[in-house]
Image (cartoon, rainbow, N blue to C red):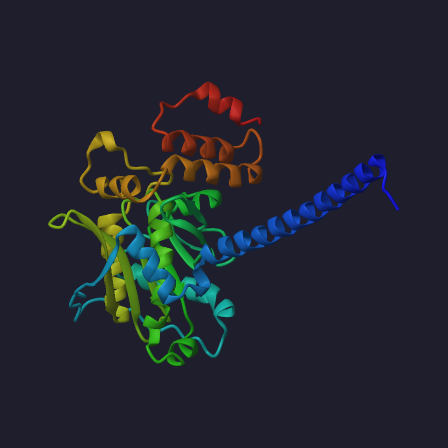
Length: 333
């Protein structure tokens, strides 16, 4: 039987419609698969501090141009003694409050001022976003630490901008289970160091990994003038050496002033390395400050001292003059 032209056109149109439907389904499926792949790749690219692997950290540090070198620990015979902390079988979380008090007492022996005019040790283990960092050059880092040493008058919302020392605490039982002892946690400490150095405005940042029994691993970023490059210096120390080195670091590479920020115009030799580090290693310093502002602004009450300090920190990060009228307006928004 013959098919009329009208019927043939209808059949062809129906076929086109079916083809379009199939193409649409294929396109939707492809987009869904690609979306899942992109989401997985994004998750894979995020470095979680608590589970940082040696290979990921090695790639990261090669990417940002930071080599790790061994430093010489000081001889401290006959000096102050850093006493062992009695864990008594407690878990890390259960032992943290007493461990913080213990560290304060021990550091005072080494001449560290704990309290007004000096520093305070803050338990930050519940601040899981303390060291969160998103940067085009470095990538995405997520996580925190256990204790942060900051200037005494530092507000809670500004702790990450004021970090001088981070303490990554491990129980004695956890340490002795590892074949390489405290060095087993080196990767975790290295990522904490990099994130804190990018975020904090203090002249220097020191990371201490310790169980307060067997000793410590200390990490810091130094500027090597001979090589015109930054490098990570790593120390394996006894408890006494740890106490001495933390005290020395706070004396030479920290400022007990809340809201401190190095200013390039002053050309202070102590402050210039941190400015240069942020300029060379980060894509944009202001972006980090703005991200911190957006994260914290809802946690501060309008017309409060905390809100004013938060806005002032944002202005300082932009190297713009203090503008009371804008700060006053920002107190209420």
